[in-house]
Amino acid sequence: MIVEDNLLAKLDSEIDSDTLHRVKYQLNNLAPPDIAHQLEIAPPKHRQVLWGLIDPELSGAVIQDLSDEIQSEFLTQMDGAEVAQLTEGLDVDDVVDILQQLPERVIPDVLKAMSMQDRQRVETVLTYHEDTAGGLMDTEVITVRPDITVDVVLRYLRRFEEIPSTTDNLFVVSRNDTFLGNLSIGKLLTSTSTTTVREVMNTEVKAINVNLIDSEVATRFQRYDLISAPVVDEHNRLLGRITIDDVVDVIVEDADHSLLAMAGLSDTEDTFSSITRTAPRRAVWLGVNLLTAIFASSAISLFEQTLDQVVALAILMPIVASMGGVAGSQTLTVVIRGMALGQVETGNLNWLLSKEFAVGALNGLLYAIVIGVIVSLWFGNPVMAVIIGLAMAINLMAAALTGTILPVVLRALHIDPALAGSVILTTITDIVGFVSFLGLAAVFLI
Image (cartoon, rainbow, N blue to C red; front, side, top):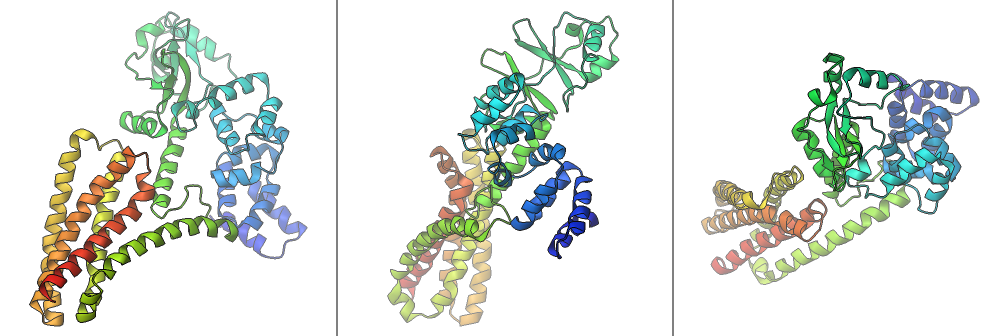
């Protein structure tokens, strides 16, 4: 978008009052998500300038579209009254997301500055963990009784100035708020006025328990093509609803987490964060990787005499380890994805393990022949060709087994497979590759 590109270009040039006025005009004529995008792609010095140019009535809608780290960057500069004013008019779930970026000592001040109704709604959601259905839900819902007519429901809805966004269903409840079913807007509009809600409501709806983890909530939305879903407690009392926009956020966050965790990075990593923030975060995981690399190298040192006598081994050794690492990463990625989608269970784990081992064995045989031919022509040594071929086959099968079993074991130990899996896998495939290759060489060449 040309207008968006021009904003940062103007800030990169000499800033004067006319330039700021033009940038402010262009910025505030964008939709809130586009304004948030401008803040996301701006370096820190520009980000603060842009934030100061946003009209106050837009700032609340903008901040809810920012990443957690950038939200926190702006929110920590505000007092409780400013945050309360910023969140005025936002959905309860969005307000809660914003409050969770604040230091705990500030939250009471924000709640105190809210209206009684808003404070009660926010406090209800804050009692649940942010990664559960309760932490995602919006308590602003429209409920109806099953014994009233469609005409009464329509007259009731006309009393609202506006209905909550993404409303595709009304929730049917009993007098004690027990959830009974959904009344779709489509059914409401196409039914005769004398029809009762009980006659047209959907009682097959599966409500979401308030303590269900957010990834499972996302899976249900994907499986049943939901736009919204009711949230209930253990007694089936209606507490709120979750809408598709909240679920999209969960899916994006999980994807970010999986991608960044593979490199040992936090899912709140800001592309344009300062050097002093970025360097220490990356240094920690680099240190962990260094320790595993030293551990793998110690396996090589066991065959120092073998390497001294056959120099070609040092040339060929990285090939075996590299192939094992790639094969293992392929399996690991597939299994972690299957676990995230709820597809990998105890009942199908043995089949998956057998399948991945078979794939590793077939590819191991294929590339054992390929590398064997290449090494035989390269060094003119058939024995060396057989050794590296066998080592290649062994490592690819070991990689397949490790890539399948490792994430299951890590999850059982309550360790994030996406974060720790790749480092452990690489260490194992390196060690198996080095030991198998150099061990066979020590037996047959020395």
